[in-house]
Image 1 (cartoon, rainbow, N blue to C red):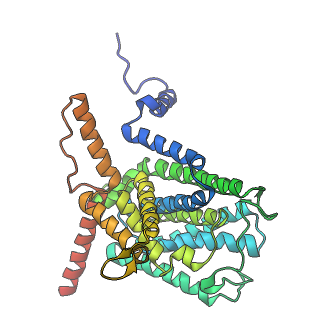
Image 2 (image 1 turned 180 degrees about the vertical axis):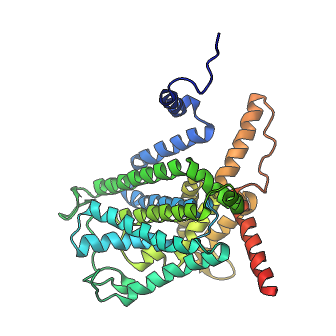
Length: 407
């Protein structure tokens, strides 16, 4: 009697059954169950927070999306971007100018701004065809500074922004809101707290979209190539694949996600000015997003979400501590952002691979002990995380540069 092999039968039917099996909650891995619980908690957050608290946390959801966009290109492919606010600002300013100065409907302006940011990703991705490591990072650092200066240069008006970009003060008016009290909003409501809840769920839906896209891509064959590029680009090339093509794709995807986050934020409570979209020091937001992703764990989409949450939580705690620091006579809150960065350093010292990878390892270890099984061989070690791979790659490339200069 012939035995049925795994390759026989209806492939599509078996594929659908495999997907259904993966979607069953009881069959999910522990990390996926924790992710589902986290999303449910985020969905229920408006039931426990006050309207003003909810308004502040809505911004955190956009930071999560922004951190995920950075992690796609830097955490997965190892191409460190030091100026990722470039894409966030293109999305934010793009949709604001289109909707406020050209009368484009809100949803269409968000789509167009996302495409505009993706084009920005192509502009940054082109150097990635020839440059890598520190050289490419320098390009990503210069890009937002050029964009920042262009906002000042075209502050009075130009053909693509008839009313001007407003310099460092930003545009003269807030773009139309998706949920608001006034007549200009897409969805008009009559109560302040309903508006805040509406804005929160706009951000939450955007987060789900970004999470689904990033998760699908990073778990696909393209995501496997991203990781392989981070580990050994020469090996990818020797296997017949073109690393430059995949790095370009990663930059475009990352730019589109970052631009989408910036665009939706402008229609959910954000105001288009340079401080909001670049940070008060031009590159502050670009630095912060790196810290968020590293805290959570590079190369893990969920790590970016957790890192953004911890970073925002640390900032809230620091701003609420108003006692005088002994010896220097300054309120603790006025030391910001130093305490937040110190907190980040502590996490990296004790959890060098990031909160999510370290947490998963330790949870597996404890679960194995609880079940009476052999604990995993390696817990909390070093040497095989995404962050380790990126650091080793950068160290190797810097050594090559220095060696080349000394010849």
